[in-house]
Length: 147
Ligand SMILES: CC(C)(COP(=O)(O)OP(=O)(O)OC[C@H]1O[C@@H](n2cnc3c(N)ncnc32)[C@H](O)[C@@H]1OP(=O)(O)O)[C@@H](O)C(=O)NCCC(=O)NCCS
Image (cartoon, rainbow, N blue to C red; front, side):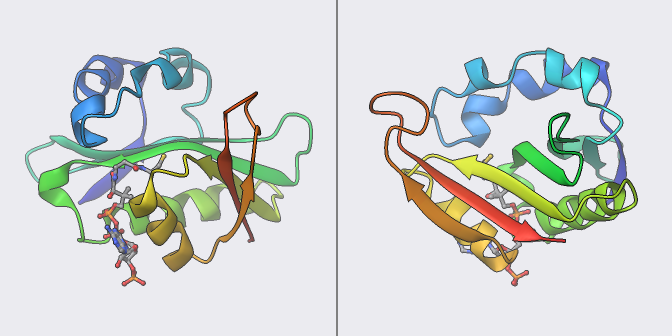
């Protein structure tokens, strides 16, 4: 597996597979093209030996708090799971944002996404359930860890 920077021209490939990779949930509205345009110096793609994109991470350094990093989305092709690809993407991202002065990283997930919660728990994140976090009825699990 090779890690490289995410590019805008990865967007069509990712967005047409996103709901499928998320087990049929409708999540495409949460990943507009702007994440592939304006955050790609801290966002990553994982490619297999044939150059096929099998995982990605969209993350950035907080503009408001430059010591904080934030991971917006991570996904791995279902046929390539449980092979430490997401772990590699996270560790590369941690190195990148540490070198820019970040000391903590955060992300959020939906309460229904138990796989994400288990994954983040293995990656050392602590979790906090926040009712109405994203508006009325928008409960989220807020996750963070130090770097
Ligand atoms: C969550 C996801 C990114 C994990 O990708 P992955 O490449 O299979 O994960 P890894 O192989 O790197 O696993 C890293 C750790 O998490 C654990 N983990 C991963 N998936 C898990 C699962 N379904 N249940 C329990 N633990 C899991 C692994 O056991 C591993 O732990 P270890 O390194 O301590 O042994 C992948 O399942 C996915 O794309 N899911 C759909 C999209 C999604 O929900 N993204 C997260 C919200 S934005």
